[in-house]
Image 1: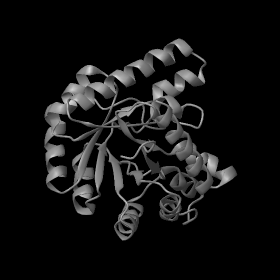
Image 2: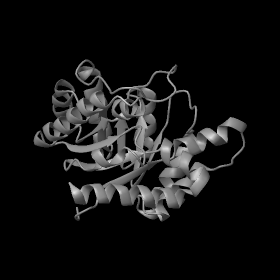
Image 3: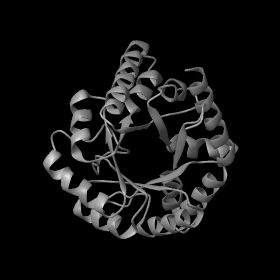
Length: 253
């Protein structure tokens, strides 16, 4: 990876949220993905939830077609269920990120319990890997979870940064500092165990720098903030700005 460069995966879920609020076909998340690609994103992320609250099966089909056409990796976020496994095996996205999922939550809150669900998750990881997808686990920066992830057969972990973002939003600087330290320590632990380290959730222009500065982190996945800001500034502009902030933070680390 060249100096100053950290990969940016753009999650386009909430383009579909806006579309679904009124029905119809506009705005189209696949078109949003195309704009993200043209604006310099390193990958496209989409979460096919069990209740299909935003991204749909048809969206995933079209996103995979677009990503194959453009040579851009598609990262499919999904729950560790048989239904989602069957869909992922059919689509064969470049990457699959297993995430916890509860229907009553507004968005993914907290990381996957890899340690507690090890026996359930390992066969899914193996089948996804056999199908040709790289497997990532969305987890908290907790030593036990990272160790379990390293034993699971997954090649990547994505460290949940939502609690860090929430602490900063609440002006709890002491808590934010403690969480940042845990993320830094967890990234180092995961890398030492041979895992590729990603991070994401709740990242914005104002809080991305300290996460992007963590040398072990090679990719950030950001969605809600970018889509929200694009209402005012356009998706291409906000992606370019996020990229500049990420790279500047890495250069100064």
